[in-house]
Image (cartoon, rainbow, N blue to C red; front, side, top):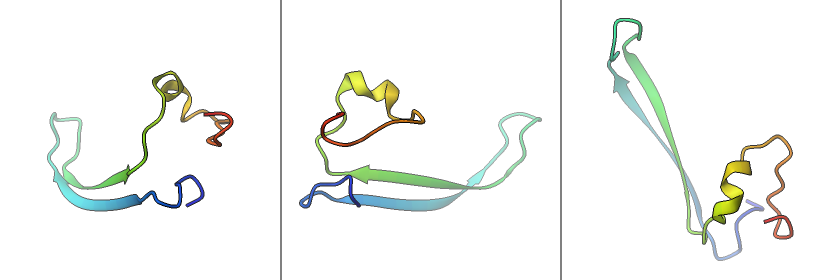
Length: 63
């Protein structure tokens, strides 16, 4: 991926889990849990609230 440094690692995994409705308005069934992890140093705290914005740039200059 272009957002990981050459020495970095990004891992994407998934599990199928059984979900029991917690109240009578929720249905029971299966859900897919997706997990994404990386070996990077992290995102600076002041940038966290902006990472899912429509025009977010993840380049080194903006971060």
